[in-house]
Image (cartoon, rainbow, N blue to C red):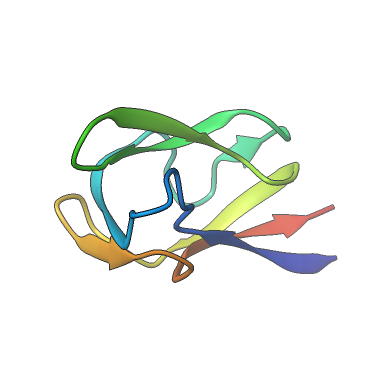
Amino acid sequence: MSLIPIYMPKFGMTMEEGLIVEWLVAEGDSVAEGDGIVVIETEKVSTEVESPAGGVVVELSCEVDDEVPVGQVIGYIESA
């Protein structure tokens, strides 16, 4: 088993941070690679971020309404 970080993605050349609008999963939830896990809002659009791997969500490091810099870890998935 290994921990897979979930990063705040960069959606555009000028994007420096994103706002966490809604978590679609909770700690302890099982996810498959590609499942929607969080909704991120930028200056122009709201986008659903997909899980980078299958496994169990073990930590959500940020709260709804947090503004998070691009590249920061926002949670972890433990892969099987």
